Length: 117
Picture: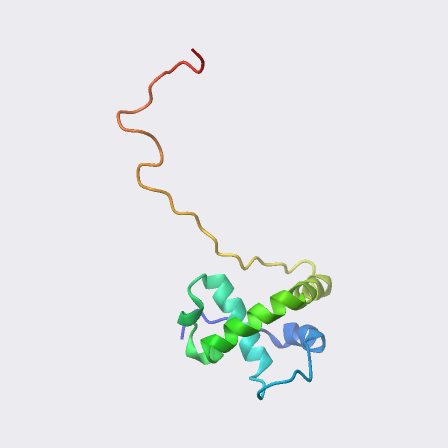
């Protein structure tokens, strides 16, 4: 599938020691695959349930993102990556704001009005 994101070996070498280990619960899905899926979803900006299947189940991707956000794991990971390679910083936010087609101005064009009566 075109447009997938995968962590490089260099990035993974920095991230892997910082990940929570020996967590209780079911058998863990491959962390590298899940983290690559989370970063892909953040870059693309679509719904979590539309996550490509190559990254694993969408519920796993979302739940891991949510749990690690609450524990502060993401902050530690991004700080470590920036310290490792400060010249290779990228943004992953794909936020956009939609505006109505008439948001640029009212009907009839610009009119001069008094600001105070």
